[in-house]
View 1: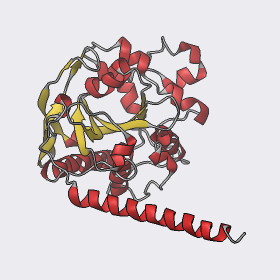
View 2: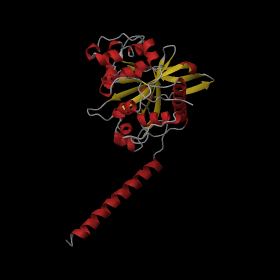
View 3: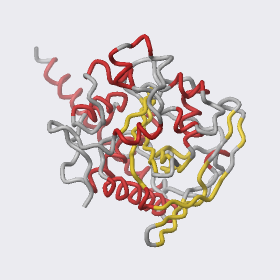
View 4: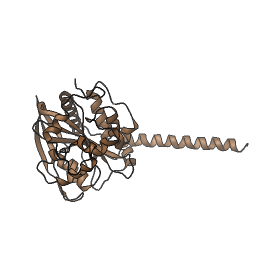
Length: 321
């Protein structure tokens, strides 16, 4: 009994010493490791996307449009594209679970315009040559943060057709003014990172947490903190529960209905890739799941009309200023 008391004190002191060492070690990392835009970057992340605004238009430089033969064999093309902000009509939320358990996932947004154009913005780690993602390294200031502006055939096709991960594409309830504000906010953040780099952080600055930050800047009803943001494979459940996904499907059906892998593969080489991956009649599929593979009755125009409609009384939507 007498020996156990000193032993407990010794264990407590040891744990406190370890905790103090960990804090000191992290503070040293903060002091010694500084983010940089000047490193030997992976070829698909060598350039940073930036935006030049002029009234109701924006010119985006370094829009990535890569052609993939596999995840390791690809040609990267960088393009400058212009967008009319007055034509921005829709926002789509993409969720890509990538682990053998539900939790880890990559998420990003895509923006649709009246003329049928779409452009995606993906918040990612900026990899150096030979690097791959590690959640632990993401806590230790080992990766810079980057906003990749890219063609949907690149950002969605890579994940669905070459990584063979599940990809879910959700239409969001959003007003046109909120869609514009969200798009501009993300492009301004891309500009800021090009001028002043920042580190990615596995807990506080991820793909999903940055999306939430942008949404909370433009809405009067902020998205509350949830473990579903830290484990973003659950983030679509959170969006559904908040009424942000534009669907009347029941909770147990909506995820399967918005899985687009079959459409992405079938239309991989289509000039209308973006319209094709939105071509399924989701409501019909929910009523008849067996028709999923053959259901393509909803045109891209019909799909755009769905999320121009007014949200139901028990749902919320993203509303801009």
